[in-house]
Image (cartoon, rainbow, N blue to C red; front, side, top):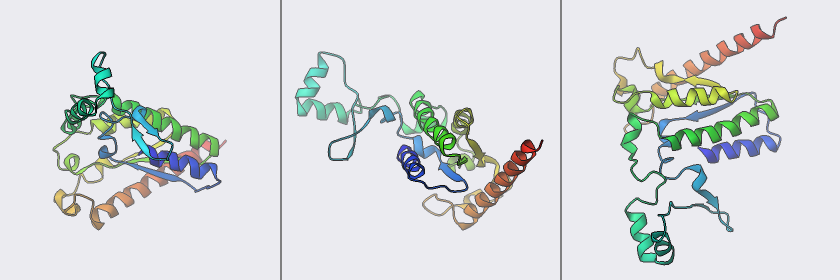
Length: 207
């Protein structure tokens, strides 16, 4: 998701001026932040995206740096991750500090972009299958929303779009993406959100 933010900033810098940008985020977009946060991302001389592994304290660090076998063992054990104890399943009930840090960094870039180029950005927070089926909480959305709003971004939280759907599993394709019906529900709700936001902006602009 940080690559999309960088691309967005580049497009705006090159003169692209859409009426509004919809930046879609799902919980899966930050799932790997505790393992490979933005601070670990680098671009090498060939233009490839690489990651700096977390290293142990000395004297073990010197061994890991100079022994490919030791480094391989360090990586295979998962110890190279920013948070070695983190597991993806943890995201269902807690938000890692690495997730909030990555979100802060990306929302800061998006907020600066919307101010510099006067193009409004709406952060569309879509729930995943587990959240819609009641198997996971919405703590991720609760973490993203204040970060986005504090950076001057509009937020569309789609958690309630499916509240009245009896057969919630029927809005998904076999690969857990929304099917056409699920997408249509999201699009209709997003349109209502943008219309309400436009009315509020117009009312605030009146003398």
